[in-house]
Amino acid sequence: MCIAGLVVLAGSLAGQTAFSAEAGRNVDGIMDNSFLVEEAYNQEAGVVQHILTAAYAYERVAGDDFESWNFGFTQEWPLFSQKHQLGYSIPHLYAHGGGNSVDGLGDVLLNYRYQAYFNEETLSAFAPRFTLVLPTGDERLGVGEDTLGYQVNLPFSTTLNDKRFVHANAGATFLPGAASSDGRDLWHYNLGASTICAPTRDVHLMLEWVGYWVETTRSSGGMPHEFVSQISPGVRKAFNSRNSSQLVAGVAVPIGVTDSAPDYGVFLYLSFEHRFLREP
Image 1 (cartoon, rainbow, N blue to C red):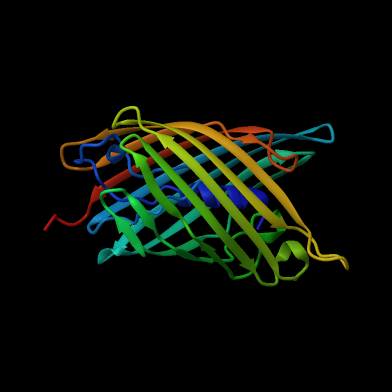
Image 2 (cartoon, rainbow, N blue to C red; image 1 turned 180 degrees about the vertical axis):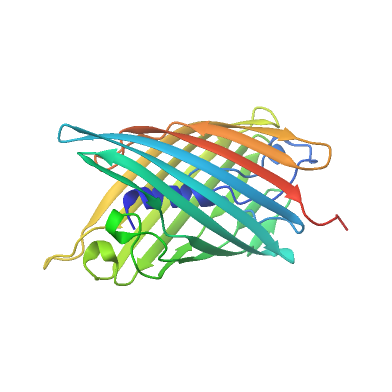
């Protein structure tokens, strides 16, 4: 999986949620809807979420300008209860630079998450995710790996007080016979952490960090990994309706920390949650 694919994967999956528009604390106003770091709250029973993301990235390499747009659409559905959650993510990449351009659908993700732990008072949660990476992207364009891949991510979330969240991620992606490595197996690893301040119920300030260890080629000396790291300040705003639906819009400015990361970018986020079943 290319670096851009890993970034759009994070952006597509980070908004997995629990729906809590009626609670009283500032942290309860938007319990989820992160951009790059996945939060550990599954969908409540009867509530579905739709997420649209668009990530612009700019990088200058060897005198050439490289620009890309990563688009993503994600849906998350509870499976009977908040314990189990199913979802999918569809990425699309447009990029140009160095005399070349890419425009194509990426590898589609099928996701299952288990709510292993959730404390409603402290909003402490742990929800391991398993994902199938489907070979839907065209490897000739560099937007797919032409293999069925597997990913595991371990998101943990908690609150420090009524106005602050912290989140942490750790995961790995396995791509057997990946096209980008001439048919060799690839392992990628990821870490992430964020802190979110909630000055009001409907406006949250965010600071996220993500790091990816992307295996590129193998040599006789071992399996080198390229380290890609970004820090991303952002803000999200919730709009709540009387029928318990919630629209969340957000923007962030990812900044490259390592040489292999894009220099800077803009991340746009839009989420809509609503009930598809009546409350019991």
